[in-house]
Length: 154
Image (cartoon, rainbow, N blue to C red):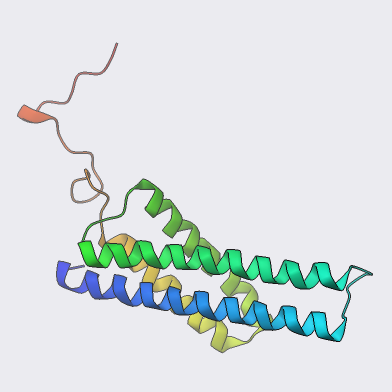
């Protein structure tokens, strides 16, 4: 992908993840309130524990998505690949979207699935557009100076 198109893709992916983080946070907040006010219980669990767990889980997942969005936004602003930790974070984000997308078909419908797959595509496209620093085109390791392979430690 050309250098011109990769910045907007990373920026759109960042905005999508940040909006998704807000949506997940709001959804879990509302679900926690519903559980708390209706005094619902699953298998005799304490309703307070269920609502607090919902809020904490939604908050943690929202922060995770915000962090992924921040990595993508930084990629777009600097026009550079993220470091190893940033790549791992975005890879886990892509895998999470794939798994949640597979479950969302039955639970939330095709619209949710399509939205998750669009975000998955944007994250993967951003990862592929920015090669890791220090790698030559095609993923091969760069040659040592002088065209010779570096001596291996004995």
